[in-house]
Image (tube, rainbow, N blue to C red; front, side, top):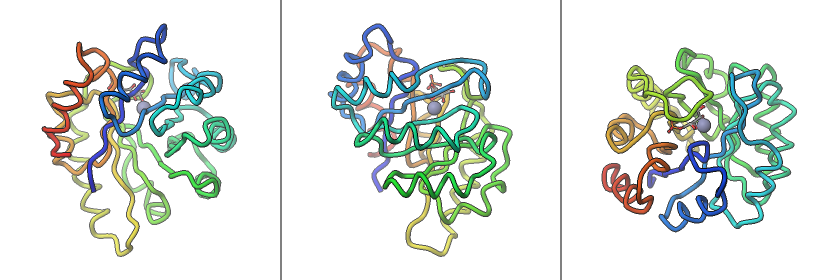
Length: 224
Ligand code: DX5
Ligand code: ZN
C-alpha cells in the first residue's frame, strides 16, 4: 500500500486556517490530521466541534480526527456526525476509553475507519483483544498535547514490534500503523522503514517555507 502523509493542523496558522488547508491540499497530501483536546486528558485545548464544522465547508482532504479527550465513547459519534462526509478515520486514545469495544463498533457503523492511539508509555499488549477489529493503530511518538515536541526514539522499536505482530496476523484486512509526533524530514524515512503506513507531521510541514517542496521531499524519502 502507498504510504500516506497527513499534516497535523495543530501546527498550522489558525488565523488563516482555511488557506493553510488549501495549501497542503495543493501540496498533494493524502489526509489532514485534526487534533481534538479537552484540557483533561491532555494539558491543552485545541480544535473542537466548531472548527470541524468550519473545515467541512472548504472541501478539505479526507479528515483524520484524533480525539485526545476523556469520554471518547460519547464524542466519537458527535465528531463523526459533524465531519460527515469528510471524515475518513476517527481515533480514540486507549487510555481514555473504557468501553473500547463498543466505541470501535460505533465508529465502524458509520463507515468510518476506527483507530486506537497509544501514548509512548502504553504497551502494545493492551490491544490484544481489539487488534483484529480495528483499522488503524496510532503510535504516539511524543506525549500528546502539543505540536513541535521532540520525537521519542524508543518509538522506532515499538513500531517495528507492532509491524511484526500485524504482519503475522491471519486475516485479510489488517490494521494500518499511523505515527504521530515529532516527525520531520530528518526522521520520516526511519519511521516509514520501521513499518509505519500513515505519517502525521505538524511542524515538520507547517514550519517549513514551501509545503509542496516539503511534502514531495517526504514522499521521495518514504518511496510513496
Ligand atoms: C500531539 C498531536 C500531534 C501533533 C503533531 O498531541 O497529537 O498530532 O500536533 O505535531 P508535530 O508533528 O509538530 O509533533
Ligand atoms: Zn495527533
